[in-house]
Image (tube, rainbow, N blue to C red; front, side):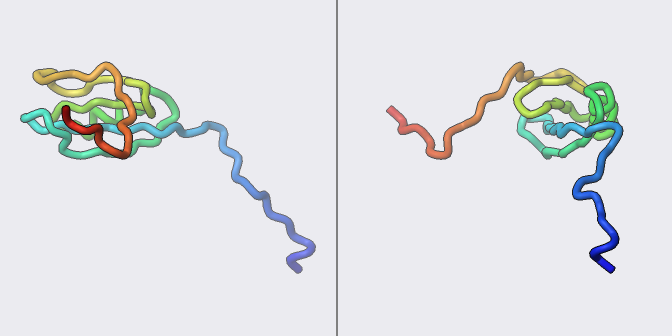
Amino acid sequence: MADVVSFPARRHSSCALSPYRAYRFAPDGSVRSTIPIEAASDADATERALCLSDGDRVELWSRARFIAHVGPLDGPIATSIALIEDEPSPEP
């Protein structure tokens, strides 16, 4: 019977979800948690990040692209990120 029925290899969706990351910051500026978010648009991802803030400052990123700040802005704010090499550079 498997020869008679064929199933599609991939599901097709009317809207593609993009991966985002929400970084929650502690009052001392350290990253408290990193939360993956899938959303159809930047606005949808920002709304979801707002729900996650719980009074903490949250930065929303889509890979290396900064999207938004959510919550109080009383600490340092990043405007870009860069990948760090696997091996630390030697101290002079």
